[in-house]
Structures are given as structure tokens and as C-alpha cells.
Amino acid sequence: MIDQAAADAVLARIEERDLVELALHVTSVEAPPGGEGESAELIYRWLADEGFAPRRVGMFEDRFNVFAEVPGSGTGPALAFNSHIDTWMRRDDHLIWRDPGNRDYHLGREDGDLLIGNPVVNDKGPMAAWMLAAKAIRDAGVKLDGSIYLTMVAGEIGQEPVDEFQGKRYLSKEVGARYLVNHSPRAGFCVCAEATAFRKGWIEAGKAFYKITVYGGPVLYTPYVSRPYAPGEHPNAIVRAMPLIARLEDWALEYERRHTYESPGGTVVPRVNVSAIRAGQPWLVLQNPEVCMLYLDIRTVPGQDGGAIRHELRALLDELGLEGTVEQFVDRPGWEAEGIEPLSDALDAAHRFEFDADTEIATPPECSMWRDHNVFNEAGIPSLTYGPPGVAGAGTFAVRKADLLRASRVYALTALAMCGPR
Image (cartoon, rainbow, N blue to C red; front, side, top):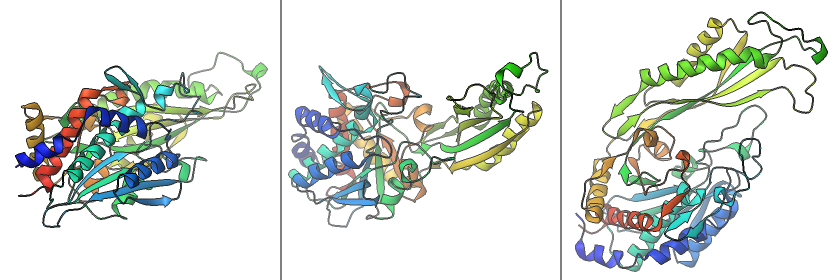
């Protein structure tokens, strides 16, 4: 139940202009993966200036999470709101982006009815929405039975250490949500605020990252490359790997059809991507590479053994008669929330209050990525994701101000339904 008087007092304090200014403020500095410190400090300072008594919760001084609280009496469940500080890419990632310096990739800006920028969509627009909602609840003087936790985390973007790319620059969950869960008060429930077009979901895919190394050889100086070569005998490892890439595409489709997982909290369709290739030396192109390395992002479903995929990939090498190795370097299982009903019901009540309609379940792509409610659910904290339209992974770089405002209102109402007076 949502107390009408409390709801009226809180919603009257959530203004679109205030939300726009906060969203622009928290997206005014860059926060590339591994470099969240300046942005985290800006968020910390806003909370401190607003009287929230925040604290830094970090494995590293320059990659820290931020925690704050709207305290309750302790007679009701504590509800966390979570969003991530890091935003997708670095300006020096020039090898993979057509226009890495585009400001819309790094910062937020206002344009008519829209807020534009990857950081606004993923994920500081939703973050600003619940930050303002929490401030409105506190400023309205609502007596809470349960506390509201404000958690802003580093390391959500899914970079992972591999090969020579090691150290804190490449860590993700270990410095972010996972670290915060173990170094702050434990919530009873969590809303992971991400873009879902006002849909809810409490299941998410896992990740199994693999590296396949295809061997070629011997190394030949270009004048000694004598075509034609029989299939599988070309000295160039890149050429030998080409049939494997085509075969992986066929396997990927069969894999996702075989493992699609449907549940009340959403449907996981575990996609596969050949996400990176390394071979040769760009500054020494006068000889063929002896090795070609393919890096695969393979999504998994809850309960699946991500390590077993290695045998399928090995079989593809054998089928094509290729010499090579298969190595798994990440295994992050997917999770489905247990005991989510109180939070789901509270969100339904809030959504119905705002939209006069039932909440729909998140779409398969929204349940087949990685969002931090996976970390909370793994820790036994029932968690779901919900937010405004605008999915950065689908190429969207804008959110409507009106939608962000409605998300803020729903977050506030959800908090009142979960933590407010009974």
C-alpha cells in the first residue's frame, strides 16, 4: 500500500527542472571504465552538499563506490537503489570506435525535450531519478519503517582482465557492486535502475568469455608466400581462422536456440559474439602471423555450466581440422531472483499509481545482458531492474525528460510502498 498523503508530499517535491539539472550535473565529467574516480567524487560531493552524509566504499582510492542512506526505524525492510558510475568507453579506444571523441559517448547535454548522451542513458539518468526521489522523501519528512540505501557503483561495464591487460584498470564487478555489497549495510531488496522502457525483470544472463587460439605457420616473409595453399595448410593463422569464424556463426545460432530460458521474471536468450581478434603486428606487416586469437562473449542462462562450452568449441576446431587451443577466462553465472514478490508487488503498485496500467515484463535483450542485479541476486538480495526507455546497447543515446521524470516518481512511490509507514 502507498500512503496517499506521503505520496502527495513526496511527488510535489520532484520537479522536472531539478531532475534535468541533476542529470546534467552527474554526466558533466567523464567516467570511462577504470577511470570512474572523478565522477564518483562529483556524486559524493552532491550528496554531501545535500546533507546525506555519504561515504566512499572502495577497493581503490580512485575507483570507489558511493553509499548513502535515508534512515528508517528498522522495523521494515531496507531497499537499495543501485546504478553504475562508469559509462561504456574511453576516448582512446580508437581501434574499435568510428568516432571515439564524440561528446555524446562521454557526457550529457540537453536538447529540447531530450537529454542526450550515452552516460545519461547508461546509467546516470536513472541514477539521478532515484537520487532526486530519495531527496524528496527525506525533505518531505516521511517517517520510514525501512531504510533507503543509495548505492552508486564502479565497474559495471563488462571489461575483464585477459592476457597482458591486467590490474585494477580492467577490473569490473570485483571493485563495484560485489565490493559494495560486502562493505556496506545489507539491503533486504534492491532496484537496479537501468533503462527498460518501464518494464521489470528479475533474471539476467551470465557470461562465459573464451579465447580460441588458431595456429598457422611457419612464418614467411611476404615474397615467399606461394599461393595456392591446400585448405588448412595456409601458413597465415588469420586465413586459417576464417572458416572457424563462419562456423562459429552457425554454432551461435544453434547454441542460443538450445539454451533459451523462460521464466516469470523474463526470458534469457544467450547470444554469442566474436568480439575481438588479435594477430600479427601492425608495425611489422612483412610476415604472416603464426597465431590468431579470437575472443568470444558467450552468454549463459541461470544454472548453466559455462565451463562445459569449452568442449563444444574444441569440437569445432577438430571438425575443421585446425590446430589450436580453447581457454576460458571469465565465468560469471546468471541469476534469477528468489523471494522477489514483495518488491515486485511494490513496484507494480507504484507503476500503476503513475501509469494506471500493469507493469510488463522486460524483453529478452534486457534479460540477456549483464546488469548489477545479478550481483545482488547472487548475494541473496532479491533484486529487479526497472527504468525509463533508452537502451544504450541498442544504439540509443537519448531519453525524454518526461520519461525520466516519470521514472523518478515511480522510484519514489516504490520506496514508499516498501519502506514507508504501514
